[in-house]
Length: 409
Image 1 (cartoon, rainbow, N blue to C red):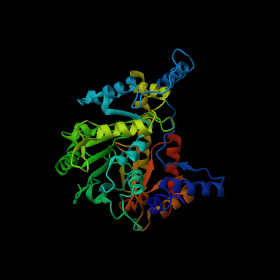
Image 2: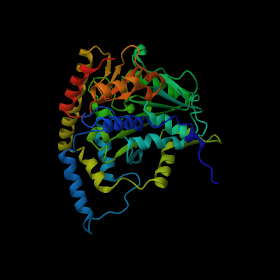
Image 3: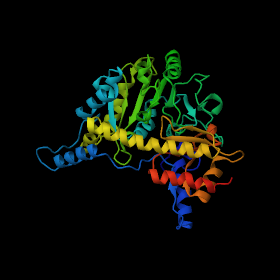
Image 4: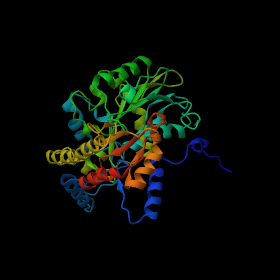
């Protein structure tokens, strides 16, 4: 009989969003006359903008003609998209990326989950707490997290982010090999200034650690002094890889396109002591396990960087952030303590005194028919908090806030 990877058996329960979906479905089946408003998972609701659709249509037409048909594309992305990313997202901020430091993929979730394949089996991992579950679960599946104690993994290093420390995580107080950071943060919706992020870059340089920086929500930043890329911080090219996404920026959650930056300066140590570029390892991994994002999708992603695409996408982001403002105001006016929602589409609220986050989920669903995400699902420091998203229509966002008047915990 073949052996399985026992690390999967250590995973507690189901994936967070699978559990919230299960509870929501059960409620809807039992109460079909009570429509539910979803402010839970971070899935966009507005359609792809016209510039993106036009580019995709044109590319599909090309795929139907023998002269312009394309089969397998480049493993790491077509030139037109790679160069658009370099120019549109980095050159304007004084960041010079080599062509082969950009890797186009089918999602930031895929990349942040797969990057751990390049780490040693006994690598020590640090995560902010609360945390996007993929960082934790992917390393737990590989055996690096240790054992689940009922509240946390005993080999992970947790960096707590809460109201007491202003949601600014401390650097690790023990040696670690890898630190996962996500800013603007999912789930708290908070950000780090350039000075606060430099503390982590300096620590990583001093302790020879790697930073995996998830910048999926960078397009929502509007506060001066908040970096859109970790490479705005001096020295970051030596210690950081950056994962970015078109999902929340341009509505590609169902279309799937993203990219990861792996600078040549980032190096790890092999068992024999030699230094190895992470870039070379990621190239090898991508070439072996991935055949690239489809040509029509990459053409659509490149349209994001056209003047028309930029104008249209900024309007969509503004609409979502208007929803975030409505949620913040609606919660605050009803006595909730609220965080985030200024530079990110996520609003992080404190649950009422004595109400844990899963009970709050059930109360919000049963009394208000509104779905959010319990903070406890994001880690130990998430207990007592709750996440709402701005990814719905203006009308439903307003209605969700009106429904809060039914909530009595």
